[in-house]
Image 1 (cartoon, rainbow, N blue to C red):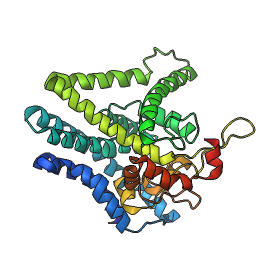
Image 2: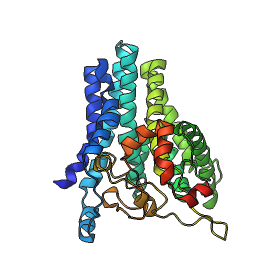
Image 3: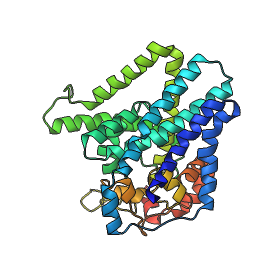
Length: 348
């Protein structure tokens, strides 16, 4: 029964469905739940730093329940996206309601779409990788699959990584640099990957071309059935989801950087190069994303097997709470800057 705790991740789309049904000020229910209720719960519930025993890991690694809990997000993400699109294009609502419903849908896209795509994208089997790409379509962020797996995990905690926030960089500045540079990086990575296997940039194996065509086709279908207003809604929802992801990127590596060795290369990624959080609510709602230190240390680990390392830098609050704090730069800097190792501050 303990394994079913990850069903809590579906509380976000459940609240979003309630927002879609009730409208009015309830349209903001998902925002209040994700960034109000969950942070309060994180303060009330104790942290859990316990790691699984080897026997428990072996058992959980073979349990398909954990995989199906990820797959189940697909109908929720697409269902809520389509529901929001149909509802907003066929009915008249006050502007504040429209904004609330777009925010609600965007939060689902970010937490249950991109976040789950991130987990599935690290799997070795083609089915999981295909599902990861499928979940990235509503966010219009399919290039994330290439940049994250072949760029971020190689360059994390270095100046070369656009998804690593610099010391004293605000989240708002990070949004701009990370989004633009990750997209450009994805094209460069794709070019290099093709060269390695002896294919030209114009090869049909260029996934970035396919991602562009798929997303253009997706928006074309939206336009065909819902017109320009529908396209605007989908685009705005995608922006909310993207900014949610990039805020998570911001807090995951803020100010942490790897040392350069005498050879000129960076030291390998260790558990000290990502911020960790053992706050239980954030852990289960985000499928253990908050144990990010171990994820970068051993990227092929499934979410249910991630460990806590005592050497990992610890966040004082859970990820949802930290995301809210990051939106207030002076508060974020005051809390987090003193936690960054001095040698890393000098390196940034």
